[in-house]
Image (cartoon, rainbow, N blue to C red):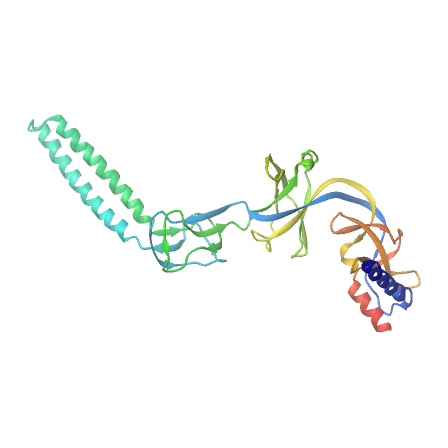
Length: 330
């Protein structure tokens, strides 16, 4: 009952404002007419990077120096962080000493065997010790280099997971890096729509917070369905969208066909609770606020008009300016 009374009051307000004002200055208008629009169904999605890497440490040690922070652009091979690798340094010194000793012993044994003072078996052992020493030195050298954390790719630092003075350990992430030029959105689609999705080649991606729409580059339905939620993942490749970042919300509109419909732009619609209306400019240049019955979202940010408008009527594209004119006239 309360909702009914509220809607009744809103309808009375619309009636009071309708058909009494002559527009004193030009307002941007749109001629409403039937036209071919894309039929689509929406799906909520998240923006993600096509190429993203999580950089971690391969040795344990205290973080001594941090060179970059979140939001900075880095190049492949750039130094990101230094870790205290003194244990690795000492291990390398020990491995080099063992390598040098094994090399000298191998050369000495080889000479003695050639002079028949030692058996070939001793040469085999000396050669094995020399090979093992060489391998240990190479491994220790690689461990020492792990004290410097380098960027594995060109990209942007999405997040820094550690601070100066923290203890870095193998397997613990230090940075997340992504390539900003390659973004996509991943949407969840119910399995009952999968048959129709197989033929979908076109989609539009809406970024509500940015007020922006873009055409999808490609639509790819992944071949598996989640056994718990019974939804399938659909990846939609994006063109370059500088304002978009991984983790941002987006809405994908998958195009499944076309139809002739009477539509009105969403930006021209005024909402008053549960009532939708538009400002209409008639042939006598009189402005009125008219209630509409709207259908689904179609095309690119348009509402299907079920009742309230006829083809050929003029709708004000800027409802804010229209409201100001109505108010000033009173």
